[in-house]
Length: 208
Image (tube, rainbow, N blue to C red; front, side):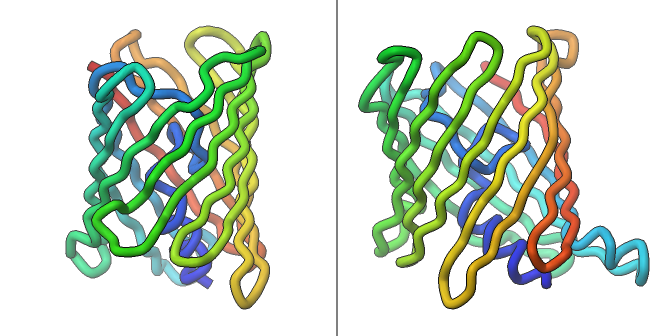
């Protein structure tokens, strides 16, 4: 059901380098703008021509070499309304120790609840693996992503996200990102969850 996809997205969508939701330990140097679009339950759209989709606009800013801040504004096309605005901060604790970095993110800092994400990133010669342990709204959600760089212009990636509240759920994604004229980064992804929903995502990222 769509509520499972929305639950996972509300926990993780805003944090990782698109199209991933699993975050990496890196810090934005200056500014980074991100715009993503997500279509939920594409199989239902094919069968019944009913499709829910949304977008979000996110701006990150590097405060220091080891910290950045973000603000994100999601928009729901179905209900034609701006959803809950979110702000957060990331602090890098370990940088490139044996190709491994560790960061801590505080999410949704406008909320009165404690929401945080532990992020471990290990870099290989042509790839990266990211491990997250997210605690949000009193629920723990681990995730793992793997990225492989074919060349400087194209990267393929995959991830698995887990959620265990009253019931256990998971969602897997495969996608990629590519450089457009060395000016902007485009991305695409397909995800599938244990409720047999297919989600499509695509977006753009620009650093400046």
